[in-house]
Each structure stands twice: as structure tokens, then as C-alpha cells.
Amino acid sequence: ATPTALMVGTGRGAKLGILIKNGEVLEAVNDVKTVIFDKTGTITAGQPQVTEVVGDQTKVLQVAASLEGASEHPLATAILKKAEDLQVVPQAVTDFRAIEGKGVAGLLAGKTAFVGNQKLLTTVHVTPELTDKIQVLQDQAKTVVLVGLDQEIIGLIAIQDVPKATSQAAITSLKARGLKTVMLTGDNQRVAQAVADQVGIDQVIADVLPGDKADQVKQFQQTGKVAFVGDGINDAPALTTADVGIAMGSGTDIAIDAGGIVLVKNDLRDVDLALALSKKTFQRIK
Ligand code: ADP
Ligand code: MG
Image 1 (cartoon, rainbow, N blue to C red):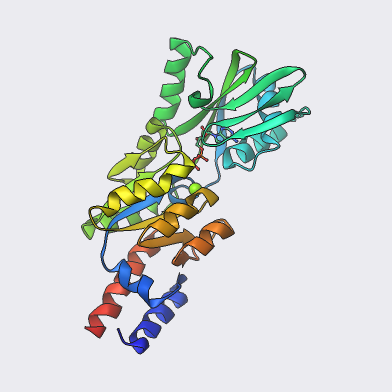
Image 2 (image 1 turned 45 degrees about the vertical axis):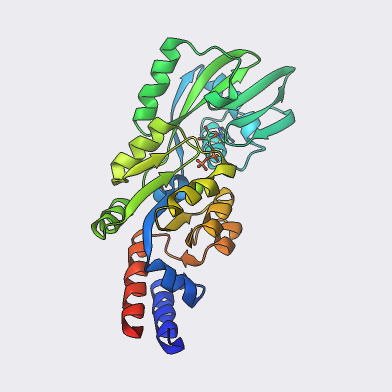
């Protein structure tokens, strides 16, 4: 690889808002067989909104907002915004705990309060009626969190994060190149599949705990080079494990540092553009 061609390639990328950290990264892109995407903030806009509250709306939002005040998760932001819009005032929480990939819990007026998915509720019974309700919402691509006090579920909150306008076009062009597209997420299988169907993703791996994302990347590396596209703190290990780590410019600093490529415009179509750039650069050299 001549240094001049590489400089032209990376320089052209920079003009397009595709920051390529070095020549090796640019070359690796050429051989990628699988592109794995994080869901929230990568395929979707990352601005989830509460769409439904099931149960006593004020009570459910109050318990949830009280706990989520101490969380930095995008779901927490959505819940706090809804509570604020409806002028629901959060209460003081002690013994706050964030349970990775599951939810949050704490003590609220002498009771154990929780907000999270069903993995958090191993000891609480979820009735068949409630399960049905949850699944209907999930099939509509909505993430559902259960809200509870002590051993009782007091309600549900459905939260939706819509795909970015360009995500579907981006997936279509990558598939047209013969690449396999995969979504990797900590969210529920039904929600993940519903979002994947909206944008045309080939395969979904859901319910992945943050610590397991890098292992999933390794699995796909057995069949060829892998690019991983993500934005979150919990994506950093997958970004460094992948042959090509692609971080969203809007992502956390930790993700941006871990990526070999940064998409300044947060547009997934730039993954395809990076591929085209790599092909061009390395054709000239050979
Ligand atoms: P991802 O970033 O891939 O969506 P996470 O591991 O951050 O995955 O979260 C996975 C799931 O854990 C969420 O979909 C939600 O059900 C639950 N969860 C995590 N954090 C919270 C929170 N602060 N409040 C409610 N639920 C949460
Ligand atoms: Mg994300």
C-alpha cells in the first residue's frame, strides 16, 4: 500500500465525514463479510419516547421516575421526560441499584421499587393477561418495562425508538454488496425483530448482556472479517474486538475512542461509503 494512496483515501473520507484512523483500518474494510449493528442510537435515533403507560398513570410514572432519576440509560431519559410533561413529581429513593441489562431498583417510602424487564423479576408472577399485553406492545417495536413495588407489578411503560430515516437504505445497499447484516442488542427478542423487520436486517441476536457483545463478534469472525457499528459505552469491547470498529459521532467518547472509523454524520449509509472508499483506494494500489 503506497502512503500517498492511503492519504488520498483517508483524506477523501474525512471530507465526507468519515474519519478513518489509519491505513490498516481502511484496508480491513475491504474484506468485511458481516456487518453487526447495535440497535439503540445506531439503527434507531436513540431518542426513545414513552408511548403508553398501563396502570394508574400517575402512580406508575411516579415510581418509575423516582428510580430513573439516578440512571443514565436512554430509557430513563424517556421516562423522566414523560413524568415531567405530566407534572408528576419524583420521590426520594435510597439504596439505588442499576442492574446491568435488566433495570433499576431502590427503596421508595419503605418499599422496594423496581423498573426493568422480565429478567429482573425472577420471583414476581406475571399473569398471562399481562404477558399478552407486553407481547402486543413488543411486536409493535416498543420496549416494555415493568414497574413494581415489593412483590407486585403496578404497571407497564412502553417506550419506542424509531429507526433513523436512512437506516433502511443503508442496510439495503450493504446487502446488495453481498454482506450479511446482523443486529446485536440487549433489548428483548420481539422488539429487536420488529425493528429489524422495519429496516431489513438479516439476523437478530437479542437479550445480549453488555459483557457478551464482544463474544458474539468473535463468533461471526469464524466466518470472515466483521465490522461492528455502535455508539454506547457497552459497545466499546465489541468495537475493539471487531476487525473494523465503526463508532457513531454522536456516541459516547468511549465508543469513539474504541472505533477505527467514526461516522461524523451518524448516517448508516456512510458504512457503505467507507466500503466504496476502501475498494477504490486498494484497487489503485494493486
Ligand atoms: P441496549 O443498550 O442494547 O438496548 P441495555 O443492556 O442497556 O441494552 O438494556 C437492556 C434492557 O435492560 C433494556 O431494554 C431494558 O429492558 C432493561 N434496562 C436497562 N436499563 C434500564 C433502566 N435504567 N430502566 C429500565 N430498564 C432498563
Ligand atoms: Mg446504542
